[in-house]
Image (tube, rainbow, N blue to C red; front, side):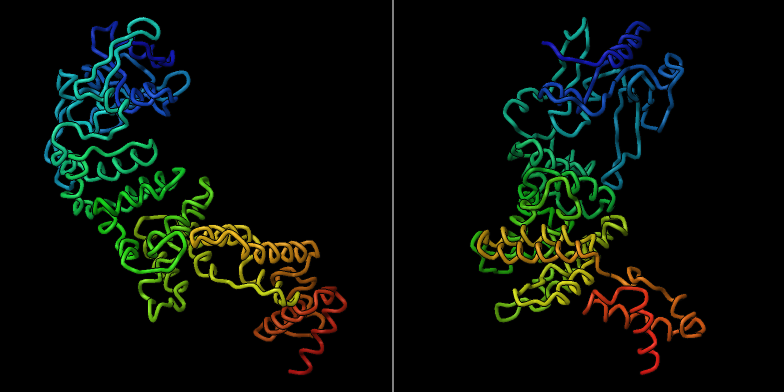
Length: 445
Protein backbone atom coordinates (compact mmCIF):
# COMPACT_ATOMS: atom_id res chain seq x y z
CA UNK A 1 0.00 0.00 0.00
CA UNK A 2 0.93 3.64 -0.43
CA UNK A 3 -0.15 6.56 1.71
CA UNK A 4 0.97 10.16 1.37
CA UNK A 5 2.26 11.41 4.73
CA UNK A 6 3.62 14.97 5.14
CA UNK A 7 7.39 15.21 5.44
CA UNK A 8 7.35 16.72 8.94
CA UNK A 9 5.03 13.95 10.22
CA UNK A 10 7.29 11.33 8.64
CA UNK A 11 10.26 12.98 10.34
CA UNK A 12 8.65 12.66 13.78
CA UNK A 13 7.89 8.97 13.17
CA UNK A 14 11.39 8.33 11.84
CA UNK A 15 13.04 9.98 14.84
CA UNK A 16 11.07 7.82 17.25
CA UNK A 17 11.90 4.69 15.25
CA UNK A 18 15.60 5.54 15.06
CA UNK A 19 15.62 5.81 18.87
CA UNK A 20 14.37 2.21 19.08
CA UNK A 21 10.67 2.92 19.58
CA UNK A 22 7.59 1.84 17.68
CA UNK A 23 5.76 4.71 15.99
CA UNK A 24 2.65 4.77 13.83
CA UNK A 25 0.38 7.38 12.32
CA UNK A 26 -3.04 6.56 13.78
CA UNK A 27 -6.73 7.33 13.92
CA UNK A 28 -8.71 9.82 11.90
CA UNK A 29 -5.76 10.99 9.82
CA UNK A 30 -5.26 7.43 8.48
CA UNK A 31 -8.99 7.23 7.76
CA UNK A 32 -8.97 10.49 5.83
CA UNK A 33 -5.75 9.71 3.96
CA UNK A 34 -7.20 6.39 2.80
CA UNK A 35 -10.24 8.30 1.55
CA UNK A 36 -8.00 10.67 -0.40
CA UNK A 37 -8.87 13.60 1.86
CA UNK A 38 -6.20 15.84 3.38
CA UNK A 39 -6.40 15.33 7.18
CA UNK A 40 -6.75 18.41 9.36
CA UNK A 41 -4.56 16.91 12.09
CA UNK A 42 -1.91 14.21 12.24
CA UNK A 43 -1.60 11.96 15.29
CA UNK A 44 1.20 9.56 16.15
CA UNK A 45 1.06 6.60 18.57
CA UNK A 46 4.20 5.12 20.11
CA UNK A 47 5.44 2.77 22.82
CA UNK A 48 7.75 5.56 24.04
CA UNK A 49 6.72 7.07 27.36
CA UNK A 50 5.95 10.81 27.49
CA UNK A 51 9.27 11.67 29.14
CA UNK A 52 11.13 9.74 26.43
CA UNK A 53 9.21 11.60 23.73
CA UNK A 54 10.08 14.94 25.32
CA UNK A 55 13.75 13.98 25.49
CA UNK A 56 13.73 13.36 21.74
CA UNK A 57 11.85 16.54 20.84
CA UNK A 58 12.95 19.68 22.62
CA UNK A 59 10.15 21.73 21.12
CA UNK A 60 7.34 19.80 22.80
CA UNK A 61 4.79 20.03 25.58
CA UNK A 62 3.33 17.26 27.75
CA UNK A 63 -0.31 18.31 27.90
CA UNK A 64 -2.25 15.82 30.04
CA UNK A 65 -2.33 12.61 32.03
CA UNK A 66 -3.44 10.66 28.96
CA UNK A 67 0.10 10.42 27.61
CA UNK A 68 -0.11 13.03 24.84
CA UNK A 69 2.94 15.13 24.00
CA UNK A 70 2.48 17.95 21.50
CA UNK A 71 5.50 18.16 19.19
CA UNK A 72 5.95 21.39 17.28
CA UNK A 73 7.08 20.50 13.75
CA UNK A 74 7.82 22.83 10.84
CA UNK A 75 4.26 23.24 9.57
CA UNK A 76 2.01 21.95 12.35
CA UNK A 77 1.68 20.64 15.86
CA UNK A 78 1.68 16.83 16.03
CA UNK A 79 0.18 14.94 18.94
CA UNK A 80 2.39 12.01 19.96
CA UNK A 81 0.57 9.71 22.39
CA UNK A 82 1.87 6.69 24.26
CA UNK A 83 -0.03 3.44 23.71
CA UNK A 84 -2.58 3.26 26.51
CA UNK A 85 -5.46 1.39 28.06
CA UNK A 86 -8.40 3.09 29.78
CA UNK A 87 -10.86 1.99 32.45
CA UNK A 88 -13.70 3.15 34.75
CA UNK A 89 -15.59 5.72 32.72
CA UNK A 90 -17.54 7.06 35.69
CA UNK A 91 -19.14 9.95 33.78
CA UNK A 92 -19.54 8.08 30.48
CA UNK A 93 -17.05 10.48 28.97
CA UNK A 94 -13.56 10.45 30.59
CA UNK A 95 -11.67 7.43 31.94
CA UNK A 96 -10.83 7.46 35.64
CA UNK A 97 -7.77 5.27 35.10
CA UNK A 98 -5.21 5.28 32.29
CA UNK A 99 -2.37 2.79 31.97
CA UNK A 100 0.39 2.75 29.39
CA UNK A 101 0.90 -0.43 27.38
CA UNK A 102 3.47 -1.85 24.98
CA UNK A 103 0.81 -3.10 22.55
CA UNK A 104 -0.40 -1.11 19.55
CA UNK A 105 -3.34 -3.48 19.09
CA UNK A 106 -4.41 -2.96 22.72
CA UNK A 107 -4.29 0.79 22.11
CA UNK A 108 -6.42 0.46 18.99
CA UNK A 109 -8.97 -1.67 20.85
CA UNK A 110 -10.09 1.31 22.99
CA UNK A 111 -10.96 3.47 19.97
CA UNK A 112 -14.53 4.22 18.89
CA UNK A 113 -15.06 2.97 15.33
CA UNK A 114 -13.21 0.57 13.08
CA UNK A 115 -12.36 3.27 10.55
CA UNK A 116 -10.61 5.19 13.37
CA UNK A 117 -8.79 2.12 14.71
CA UNK A 118 -6.18 1.81 11.96
CA UNK A 119 -2.47 2.60 12.13
CA UNK A 120 0.10 3.24 9.42
CA UNK A 121 3.84 2.62 9.78
CA UNK A 122 5.77 4.59 7.16
CA UNK A 123 8.67 2.60 5.72
CA UNK A 124 9.98 4.32 2.63
CA UNK A 125 8.42 7.49 1.26
CA UNK A 126 4.73 6.85 0.72
CA UNK A 127 5.12 3.09 1.20
CA UNK A 128 4.40 1.45 4.52
CA UNK A 129 2.42 -1.05 6.55
CA UNK A 130 -1.27 -0.77 7.48
CA UNK A 131 -2.28 -2.25 10.82
CA UNK A 132 -6.03 -2.89 10.71
CA UNK A 133 -7.14 -5.47 13.31
CA UNK A 134 -10.84 -4.55 13.18
CA UNK A 135 -11.51 -4.25 9.46
CA UNK A 136 -11.56 -0.47 9.23
CA UNK A 137 -10.37 -0.42 5.62
CA UNK A 138 -13.19 -2.78 4.64
CA UNK A 139 -15.78 -0.66 6.46
CA UNK A 140 -14.46 2.47 4.77
CA UNK A 141 -14.89 0.82 1.38
CA UNK A 142 -18.40 -0.30 2.31
CA UNK A 143 -19.27 3.11 3.83
CA UNK A 144 -20.16 1.67 7.21
CA UNK A 145 -19.79 3.13 10.72
CA UNK A 146 -19.08 0.15 13.01
CA UNK A 147 -18.07 0.24 16.68
CA UNK A 148 -14.84 -1.47 17.71
CA UNK A 149 -15.60 -4.67 19.61
CA UNK A 150 -18.73 -4.61 21.78
CA UNK A 151 -20.69 -1.45 20.87
CA UNK A 152 -22.52 -1.40 24.21
CA UNK A 153 -19.16 -1.20 25.99
CA UNK A 154 -17.85 1.50 23.67
CA UNK A 155 -20.89 3.73 24.24
CA UNK A 156 -20.98 3.09 27.98
CA UNK A 157 -17.35 4.22 28.10
CA UNK A 158 -18.00 7.42 26.18
CA UNK A 159 -21.55 8.52 25.41
CA UNK A 160 -20.31 11.15 22.97
CA UNK A 161 -19.41 8.33 20.59
CA UNK A 162 -23.11 7.92 19.81
CA UNK A 163 -23.31 11.50 18.49
CA UNK A 164 -20.04 10.96 16.66
CA UNK A 165 -21.52 7.94 14.90
CA UNK A 166 -24.37 10.09 13.63
CA UNK A 167 -21.97 12.85 12.64
CA UNK A 168 -19.74 10.50 10.63
CA UNK A 169 -22.74 8.91 8.93
CA UNK A 170 -24.09 12.35 8.01
CA UNK A 171 -20.88 13.95 6.77
CA UNK A 172 -19.44 10.92 4.99
CA UNK A 173 -22.67 9.53 3.57
CA UNK A 174 -22.20 6.26 5.51
CA UNK A 175 -24.73 3.97 7.17
CA UNK A 176 -24.50 2.88 10.80
CA UNK A 177 -23.99 -0.87 11.04
CA UNK A 178 -27.15 -2.50 12.53
CA UNK A 179 -25.52 -3.91 15.68
CA UNK A 180 -23.94 -0.52 16.37
CA UNK A 181 -27.23 1.29 15.74
CA UNK A 182 -29.10 -1.05 18.08
CA UNK A 183 -26.55 -0.38 20.82
CA UNK A 184 -26.99 3.38 20.38
CA UNK A 185 -30.73 2.97 20.86
CA UNK A 186 -30.17 0.93 24.02
CA UNK A 187 -27.65 3.39 25.43
CA UNK A 188 -29.25 6.64 24.19
CA UNK A 189 -30.24 7.73 27.71
CA UNK A 190 -26.53 8.14 28.52
CA UNK A 191 -26.46 11.21 26.27
CA UNK A 192 -28.10 13.08 29.15
CA UNK A 193 -24.68 12.97 30.88
CA UNK A 194 -22.98 14.92 28.09
CA UNK A 195 -22.02 18.56 28.58
CA UNK A 196 -23.63 21.26 26.48
CA UNK A 197 -20.27 22.15 24.96
CA UNK A 198 -19.69 18.59 23.68
CA UNK A 199 -23.18 18.35 22.23
CA UNK A 200 -22.73 21.73 20.57
CA UNK A 201 -19.49 20.64 18.87
CA UNK A 202 -21.09 17.58 17.30
CA UNK A 203 -24.30 19.33 16.26
CA UNK A 204 -22.41 22.21 14.63
CA UNK A 205 -20.55 19.67 12.49
CA UNK A 206 -23.83 17.95 11.56
CA UNK A 207 -25.33 21.33 10.67
CA UNK A 208 -22.37 21.88 8.34
CA UNK A 209 -23.33 18.88 6.22
CA UNK A 210 -24.87 19.34 2.81
CA UNK A 211 -28.09 17.83 4.18
CA UNK A 212 -28.19 18.12 7.99
CA UNK A 213 -31.68 16.59 7.88
CA UNK A 214 -30.01 13.19 7.51
CA UNK A 215 -28.25 13.64 10.84
CA UNK A 216 -31.25 14.94 12.77
CA UNK A 217 -33.48 12.21 11.37
CA UNK A 218 -30.90 9.67 12.52
CA UNK A 219 -30.68 11.29 15.96
CA UNK A 220 -34.44 10.93 16.26
CA UNK A 221 -34.64 7.37 14.93
CA UNK A 222 -31.91 6.23 17.34
CA UNK A 223 -33.55 7.83 20.38
CA UNK A 224 -30.84 10.46 20.90
CA UNK A 225 -32.88 13.52 19.94
CA UNK A 226 -35.48 12.78 22.62
CA UNK A 227 -32.65 12.96 25.16
CA UNK A 228 -30.67 15.98 23.99
CA UNK A 229 -33.53 18.00 22.46
CA UNK A 230 -37.02 16.81 23.43
CA UNK A 231 -38.38 20.17 22.23
CA UNK A 232 -37.54 19.18 18.65
CA UNK A 233 -38.39 15.50 19.00
CA UNK A 234 -41.98 16.27 20.03
CA UNK A 235 -42.45 18.10 16.71
CA UNK A 236 -42.77 14.66 15.10
CA UNK A 237 -46.16 14.33 16.78
CA UNK A 238 -47.57 17.62 15.50
CA UNK A 239 -49.36 17.33 12.13
CA UNK A 240 -48.85 20.01 9.54
CA UNK A 241 -50.43 20.13 6.11
CA UNK A 242 -47.43 20.91 3.92
CA UNK A 243 -46.77 19.78 0.38
CA UNK A 244 -43.40 18.27 1.31
CA UNK A 245 -43.90 17.43 5.01
CA UNK A 246 -46.73 16.00 7.06
CA UNK A 247 -45.47 17.06 10.50
CA UNK A 248 -43.61 19.99 12.02
CA UNK A 249 -40.41 17.96 12.44
CA UNK A 250 -40.14 17.03 8.75
CA UNK A 251 -41.01 20.59 7.71
CA UNK A 252 -38.18 21.87 9.93
CA UNK A 253 -35.72 19.42 8.37
CA UNK A 254 -36.60 20.42 4.81
CA UNK A 255 -36.25 24.05 5.87
CA UNK A 256 -32.82 23.62 7.45
CA UNK A 257 -31.59 21.80 4.32
CA UNK A 258 -32.64 24.87 2.29
CA UNK A 259 -30.48 27.27 4.31
CA UNK A 260 -26.87 28.07 3.31
CA UNK A 261 -24.41 25.42 4.42
CA UNK A 262 -21.85 27.93 5.67
CA UNK A 263 -24.26 30.03 7.77
CA UNK A 264 -24.67 28.56 11.26
CA UNK A 265 -27.11 31.27 12.37
CA UNK A 266 -29.48 30.51 9.49
CA UNK A 267 -29.09 26.76 9.92
CA UNK A 268 -30.10 27.01 13.58
CA UNK A 269 -32.94 29.40 12.76
CA UNK A 270 -34.20 27.04 10.07
CA UNK A 271 -34.03 24.07 12.41
CA UNK A 272 -35.87 25.76 15.29
CA UNK A 273 -38.09 28.33 13.55
CA UNK A 274 -41.24 26.28 14.29
CA UNK A 275 -40.20 24.71 17.60
CA UNK A 276 -42.95 26.76 19.29
CA UNK A 277 -45.73 25.03 17.36
CA UNK A 278 -46.30 22.06 19.71
CA UNK A 279 -47.13 24.45 22.57
CA UNK A 280 -49.47 26.60 20.45
CA UNK A 281 -51.30 23.95 18.41
CA UNK A 282 -55.08 24.49 18.60
CA UNK A 283 -57.80 23.90 16.00
CA UNK A 284 -55.21 23.33 13.31
CA UNK A 285 -53.48 26.67 13.94
CA UNK A 286 -50.32 27.79 15.70
CA UNK A 287 -51.12 31.27 16.98
CA UNK A 288 -48.02 33.27 17.99
CA UNK A 289 -45.78 30.22 17.74
CA UNK A 290 -42.91 32.48 16.71
CA UNK A 291 -42.79 34.07 20.17
CA UNK A 292 -42.94 30.74 21.97
CA UNK A 293 -40.31 29.41 19.55
CA UNK A 294 -38.04 32.35 20.30
CA UNK A 295 -38.18 31.56 24.03
CA UNK A 296 -37.67 27.82 23.64
CA UNK A 297 -34.80 28.26 21.19
CA UNK A 298 -33.06 30.62 23.59
CA UNK A 299 -33.25 27.98 26.33
CA UNK A 300 -32.00 25.21 24.01
CA UNK A 301 -29.03 27.19 22.71
CA UNK A 302 -28.11 28.32 26.22
CA UNK A 303 -28.16 24.67 27.28
CA UNK A 304 -25.73 23.90 24.49
CA UNK A 305 -23.48 26.82 25.52
CA UNK A 306 -23.71 28.87 22.34
CA UNK A 307 -22.52 32.46 22.55
CA UNK A 308 -24.91 35.23 23.60
CA UNK A 309 -24.40 36.99 20.28
CA UNK A 310 -25.30 33.93 18.21
CA UNK A 311 -28.34 33.22 20.40
CA UNK A 312 -29.53 36.80 19.96
CA UNK A 313 -29.21 36.57 16.16
CA UNK A 314 -31.00 33.21 15.89
CA UNK A 315 -33.88 34.11 18.21
CA UNK A 316 -34.36 37.51 16.53
CA UNK A 317 -34.89 35.74 13.19
CA UNK A 318 -37.29 33.23 14.72
CA UNK A 319 -39.35 35.93 16.43
CA UNK A 320 -39.77 37.82 13.15
CA UNK A 321 -39.99 35.02 10.59
CA UNK A 322 -43.80 35.27 10.30
CA UNK A 323 -43.80 38.76 8.76
CA UNK A 324 -46.42 39.20 6.05
CA UNK A 325 -46.00 41.72 3.23
CA UNK A 326 -48.79 43.28 1.19
CA UNK A 327 -48.24 45.27 -1.98
CA UNK A 328 -50.20 48.23 -0.64
CA UNK A 329 -47.63 48.87 2.09
CA UNK A 330 -46.71 52.55 2.17
CA UNK A 331 -43.13 53.73 2.14
CA UNK A 332 -43.51 54.44 5.84
CA UNK A 333 -44.58 50.82 6.44
CA UNK A 334 -41.49 49.55 4.62
CA UNK A 335 -39.24 51.83 6.68
CA UNK A 336 -40.89 50.70 9.91
CA UNK A 337 -40.32 47.09 8.84
CA UNK A 338 -36.63 47.84 8.33
CA UNK A 339 -36.50 49.54 11.72
CA UNK A 340 -38.16 46.59 13.47
CA UNK A 341 -35.97 43.93 11.87
CA UNK A 342 -32.73 45.89 11.78
CA UNK A 343 -30.99 46.75 8.54
CA UNK A 344 -28.21 44.24 9.17
CA UNK A 345 -30.72 41.40 9.72
CA UNK A 346 -32.84 41.87 6.59
CA UNK A 347 -30.82 39.56 4.26
CA UNK A 348 -30.83 36.73 6.82
CA UNK A 349 -34.56 37.08 7.50
CA UNK A 350 -35.35 36.94 3.78
CA UNK A 351 -33.11 33.87 3.40
CA UNK A 352 -34.97 32.19 6.28
CA UNK A 353 -38.34 32.99 4.69
CA UNK A 354 -37.19 31.51 1.37
CA UNK A 355 -36.06 28.35 3.16
CA UNK A 356 -39.36 28.22 5.08
CA UNK A 357 -41.25 28.48 1.79
CA UNK A 358 -39.23 25.61 0.35
CA UNK A 359 -39.94 23.62 3.52
CA UNK A 360 -43.62 24.25 2.83
CA UNK A 361 -43.35 23.15 -0.79
CA UNK A 362 -43.91 26.70 -2.04
CA UNK A 363 -41.42 27.97 -4.61
CA UNK A 364 -43.72 30.21 -6.65
CA UNK A 365 -45.66 32.48 -6.86
CA UNK A 366 -45.45 33.63 -3.23
CA UNK A 367 -41.75 34.31 -3.64
CA UNK A 368 -42.66 37.12 -6.00
CA UNK A 369 -44.11 39.10 -3.07
CA UNK A 370 -40.87 38.52 -1.17
CA UNK A 371 -38.85 39.77 -4.13
CA UNK A 372 -41.05 42.84 -4.38
CA UNK A 373 -40.51 43.67 -0.71
CA UNK A 374 -36.77 43.13 -1.15
CA UNK A 375 -36.75 45.64 -4.02
CA UNK A 376 -38.63 48.19 -1.94
CA UNK A 377 -36.24 47.70 0.98
CA UNK A 378 -33.30 48.31 -1.34
CA UNK A 379 -34.95 51.49 -2.61
CA UNK A 380 -35.37 52.78 0.95
CA UNK A 381 -31.76 51.94 1.74
CA UNK A 382 -30.59 53.85 -1.32
CA UNK A 383 -32.58 56.86 -0.18
CA UNK A 384 -30.38 56.84 2.95
CA UNK A 385 -33.30 57.57 5.28
CA UNK A 386 -33.09 57.14 9.04
CA UNK A 387 -33.55 53.61 10.36
CA UNK A 388 -32.82 54.42 14.01
CA UNK A 389 -32.70 57.60 16.14
CA UNK A 390 -28.93 57.57 15.70
CA UNK A 391 -29.44 58.28 12.00
CA UNK A 392 -31.13 61.65 12.65
CA UNK A 393 -29.24 64.77 11.59
CA UNK A 394 -29.48 66.13 15.14
CA UNK A 395 -28.99 64.52 18.55
CA UNK A 396 -29.93 65.17 22.16
CA UNK A 397 -27.26 67.82 22.60
CA UNK A 398 -28.70 69.80 19.68
CA UNK A 399 -32.18 69.56 21.19
CA UNK A 400 -30.96 70.78 24.59
CA UNK A 401 -29.11 73.75 23.08
CA UNK A 402 -32.04 74.71 20.84
CA UNK A 403 -34.69 74.50 23.56
CA UNK A 404 -32.63 75.34 26.62
CA UNK A 405 -33.38 72.00 28.25
CA UNK A 406 -31.45 70.04 30.84
CA UNK A 407 -30.68 66.36 30.31
CA UNK A 408 -33.75 64.26 31.09
CA UNK A 409 -36.74 62.32 29.83
CA UNK A 410 -38.10 65.27 27.80
CA UNK A 411 -35.06 65.22 25.53
CA UNK A 412 -35.47 61.50 24.90
CA UNK A 413 -39.18 61.93 24.21
CA UNK A 414 -38.50 64.62 21.60
CA UNK A 415 -35.84 62.51 19.84
CA UNK A 416 -38.20 59.52 19.68
CA UNK A 417 -41.01 61.67 18.28
CA UNK A 418 -38.67 63.20 15.70
CA UNK A 419 -37.67 59.74 14.58
CA UNK A 420 -41.29 58.65 14.19
CA UNK A 421 -41.98 61.70 12.04
CA UNK A 422 -38.93 61.02 9.88
CA UNK A 423 -40.15 57.45 9.36
CA UNK A 424 -43.35 58.94 7.95
CA UNK A 425 -41.55 61.65 5.95
CA UNK A 426 -37.82 61.03 5.27
CA UNK A 427 -37.45 64.54 3.81
CA UNK A 428 -37.69 65.92 7.37
CA UNK A 429 -34.28 64.48 8.20
CA UNK A 430 -32.42 67.76 7.76
CA UNK A 431 -30.96 69.82 10.60
CA UNK A 432 -33.12 72.93 10.22
CA UNK A 433 -36.32 70.95 9.67
CA UNK A 434 -35.67 68.77 12.71
CA UNK A 435 -34.95 71.73 14.98
CA UNK A 436 -38.22 73.34 13.88
CA UNK A 437 -40.08 70.10 14.53
CA UNK A 438 -38.41 69.82 17.94
CA UNK A 439 -39.69 73.28 18.91
CA UNK A 440 -43.20 72.33 17.79
CA UNK A 441 -43.12 69.05 19.71
CA UNK A 442 -41.90 70.75 22.88
CA UNK A 443 -44.44 73.53 22.62
CA UNK A 444 -47.35 71.17 22.07
CA UNK A 445 -46.34 69.11 25.08
